Image (cartoon, rainbow, N blue to C red; front, side):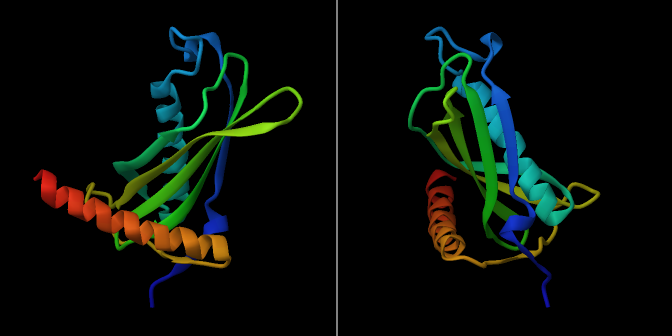
Amino acid sequence: MREEKRVADSITTQVQIIMEKDINGAHRLFGGQLLEWIDVVAAVVARRHCQREVTTAAIDNLQFRAPAELGSTLFLEGRLTHVGHTSMEVRVDSFTEDLMGVRTLINRAYLVLVALDDLGHPIRVPGLRLETEEERLEWKGGERRRSLRGQRRKENF
């Protein structure tokens, strides 16, 4: 039987303060900087789950909902939403927090990462034990996104 791990076992949070070096010409967080932080959080989530090196295979969905301003505190939280045989889908939510502690969701991203063996080849990952209704809903969403990725792959290649 395939080993399973809980979603909670690999949840990862990263905190940043948006500095001058992180902003664009409009004095807002540069999207590329946010993407780098999102990719790192997703990789840590995936590595914790499979206990292997991983590589990012796809950034499936990246939605900018609100800007992040210079000096804001930024929270990124990653969690597994779906696993296949060798791949893992990770959702990373990014929030700003003002000085009064009010959080605003600014971004939600879904990434697909693949576990690698010592030779850099894909390797089987543990299953995912779903414990809450939210986790079951995310799993169903992950199945839909996986199907759409497969359709797009066929169309583009």
